[in-house]
Length: 365
Image 1 (tube, rainbow, N blue to C red):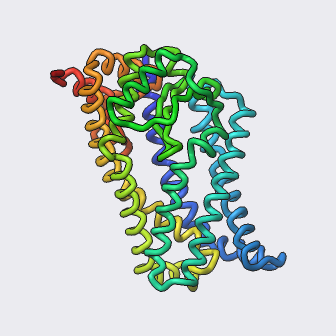
Image 2: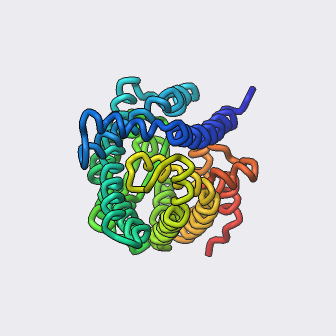
Image 3: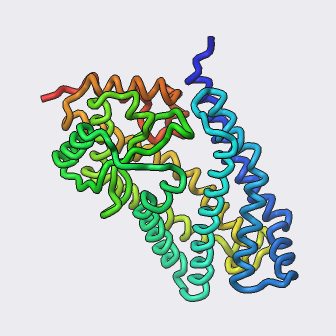
């Protein structure tokens, strides 16, 4: 009988590769076929110009991309999860989430696109200015996500288990982490996977516990997973990852600045200030993002190992750590020991077996 975790993981790997290749080719087709230019000319003939034209072009472009990705997205996000009994979400709820995600994506892209064209017109070193804007926008979004975005998809309430809540606050105090509060979110309405997070910045910093985690895991196991999350904060991993992602963003915009004169000519475009150049900008981010992904994953795996080590040091709970990993692997159908190439390409965390080995070999004081 085939291993469900291995079968699920292999399909996810294939779908991830297919998604990257498919969307890369899709953007190339949009550019090489002249569809991007046609879309602008069509909307201009309505007639539209200025900001309304930007809004209409972006809406049309994203809607076309969504429709062309819909069969893949539905299979990956709904059919596959139900096939392996990882989701109990109803079709109507899935479509509602798609609508919410689409509206948010459109709003964020519109802000970034408007800023991009404004900076192009106002600044000579546009690549540096727009990079700074995108970085600041990403940080602000991370800060506001717990209070503006997550509640759109999950209902949450303050954790009612006062004993567990006090234990989490005591752990935060020992690790010198400022914590607003601890919330439980209704993961079980959409997925049967378990998760916990330490999200937000400043006054929005909070713990989010999935109800699928609280129902099946002991207090010791929950303490370990949150010690891991707090460790990322104590070790400044979040700031370091922001720095890495910022460097990638600046690098990509600089490459666009240096090479766009050539690539624009390949697709009969005159300048980046043209709306039809949007797929080209996205193509740059997709291509160089794929190149940078293994390096970012390597850095992330190192940070995850450091967080595991600190969590073990703070809690001294090797047994709870091991049992937590065993439960998460079974519940989330994790690939416990992937091929080195798969690990190199896809894994932002060390595989489960490596994390268990680290815990068993850790010497508590």
